[in-house]
Length: 276
Image 1: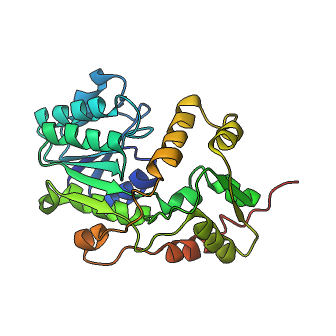
Image 2: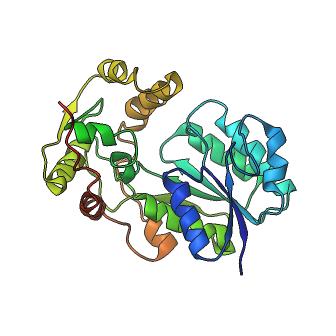
């Protein structure tokens, strides 16, 4: 049966994939953004009732991240509005090992007890669609992180789980903590990318001050704060162990980082040669 689903962050790494899956499944998607036909703005609660009207489910991806102050209050208020609007299902994208994200989970669950939470580790696609793409193309990925491994998760796995939860009540109330099948250090991840891309890409560990100084001209101040939080607090070893969340949700193993690297390298996205 066709359903009408609101996707917040519909152009993001997960939202875009969820939108494609929903449309392929015959569902109607209402994108949630300030420029959409029915506009949505996190900072303007007056836009919320209209965008929630008549939808069966909503995917909540908070920008820029649930780690930022005020995210729990905003997502909890949206969940309450969705409940009042008669929305049947709500899926929240959350971050693994982030106290701010878990506060948002609690706020959402308090307002919408049947919400499904997808709590994800670091995305594979940050290397090909996010802020780490340009460093890969430049040949040097310099980050303030050492030998702490991370079980990188693929956004296609996240999207498949979220899509299922948006259209099927069997996921109501579930917490899906999702990772890849193995943990790699950032140096190991970059080495796998270099081998698959067939070009030299090195990982260099730098101090937080060096990293943030280099990033200051490229990202806004609030993003700098978020990067400091992610690299100095979340990547401290708390998330090193993979989970069985993908297997429990989908009945299959999670996508391995090597599969992501091989398929992404074949697209040519890492093949560009930097201009001298």
